[in-house]
Image (tube, rainbow, N blue to C red; front, side, top):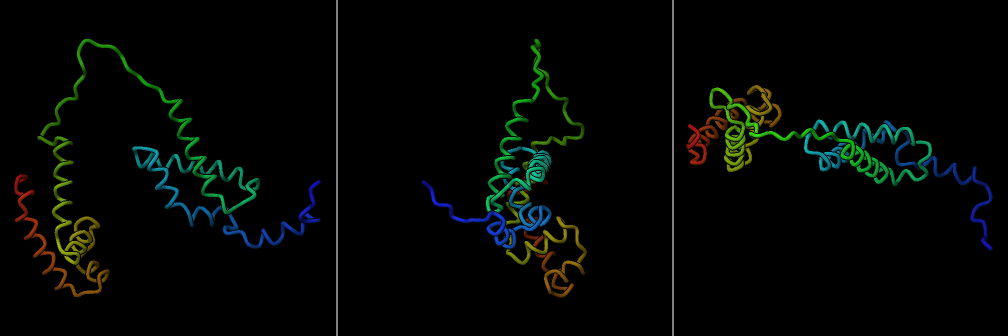
Amino acid sequence: MTTPVCTSASTAAEPAALTLPYPSFASYVRARQPVLLRTARSLTANPSDAEDLLQTALTKTYVAWERIEDHRALDGYVRRALLNTRTSQWRKRRVDEFVCEELPEPDPVPGGNDPAEQQALHDAMWRAIKKLPARQRAMVVLRYYEDLSEVQTAEVLGVSVGTVKSAVSRALGKLREDPELGLVR
């Protein structure tokens, strides 16, 4: 025989409802979306596909929100929904392969803008930027990758505009002298 642990389900459910880590689905999504998006990105090759996958899994979670008893296990529920959805997508994928006598090769990109060369340049640039001191690296990234003005960069870093100008100038000089980027010129 089993001994009942609680005599009334309604009195046992009230304290649990007050201590839910996420009182609403929206608060759960706001709090956990970045972590779940990283999980989705690990399941797909394309960031846009990862966002779509996460939205689909969150839709499934929203539909089941009232049925989920333990809200402390929501991440596991959503991860399982991500994995199941991705598996279903993979199974449904359509593969169009045709036998042909000659392998189709992409037409060369005019102007010498080979995507492999562009990626190599991108990688070399990031390696060179990583060699810069932290302060110069931050200023270069804010100025040229985040496209902030000198004034905005100075405000973000809490320095004067003149400091930004001189540090960026020195950083660009170091980048011009980098031997790995010298091959690109």
